[in-house]
Image (cartoon, rainbow, N blue to C red):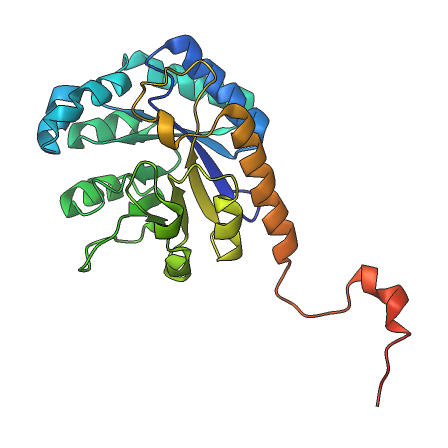
Length: 253
C-alpha cells in the first residue's frame, strides 16, 4: 500500500461541513501533512442510513455526508493530481457500486463490520478491504480483510484504547485525538493507521469535531508516526553505524 512501513489514512469524515471548497482544502491538508491517503464518507440517502442503524437521532449528522454524487469522481481526481490515495466509506448496500470503480481498496466502518452480507458485497469487486473491528464478545465474519482495532467511542478515552490487542490486527482506527497514539500503535505493531482530522474552519458543532485533529495536529501526528517507524528499526540485533567507533572499547572475556 505504501513505501512507508505504515499506511496512514487521514479521515475527513464530515468536518468539511458539506462544503465543496472545504473538501478540496482537506485533500491539500492531508497531502501536505504527509498522509498516504485521504478518506471521505458518503451516503446517498441519509434517512435510509438513519433507519438502517436505528439511529434517527443522528440523522442531522448523516446529512453532512450526503453530498452530490458527482463530487465523488471530482474529489478522486483531485486527490490523484495531488499525489495522495483516495478512499471513501459508504454505509448502504446500494452505495458500494457507486464507489467501486473509484477506490483501489474499500474501507468498512466498525458500525457495519458485523453485517456479513454487507462485507461480502464488497468482496464481489476483488479489491483489498480494510475493516474496522469494534469491541465484541463473539466472533464475526471478516473474510480476508485487513483488520483495524477500533474503539468505537468519539472521542475514545486513552485508558480504553487497549493497544495490546494490536498483535491480532493489522492496524488502528484511532478516535482518541491524541498526538502520540499513532506512534504508540506503530510500536505495538500497526502498519495501517486511520485518524480523523478537521479544518480550521470546521464548525465546532460538527459531530466529528471533538475526535478530529486540527491541521497542525495532523502534521505532528504523522511526524510522530514516522519517528516511531524509524525508531522501531528492522528487528535485527546488530552493531549500528553509530556504535562502531565505540565498539573497540568493549571488554571481552
